[in-house]
Length: 111
Figure 1 (cartoon, helix red, strand yellow):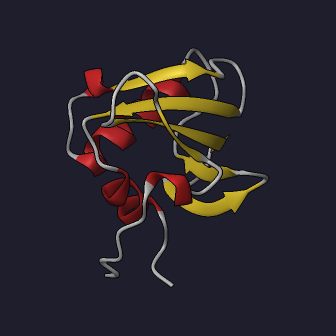
Figure 2: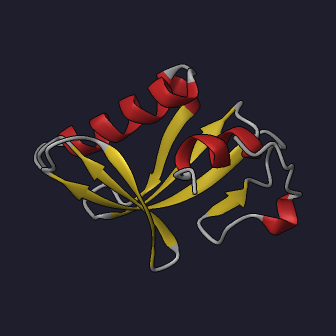
């Protein structure tokens, strides 16, 4: 895996530094619920496209998104917060305690 370190001003458009903390980032997602499996599909319209293996009913897709992110980043669910998009495919999620290098390595497919 590429160990090149990016500065925070070189982040992709879908990843922003949260002004409140240096280890909190906001990720913009385009979610596609009801897929066969949960997986990152790459960039889509300035967001990171994510397929979710959960139906878009009664908050199940939102719960699946939070569970997936906490699992892949190996953090507590309380460190993942849905900021916007509760009833939309376009979501913004705050992830705390994870450096941007780990976010990029984990979410971006290996080229």
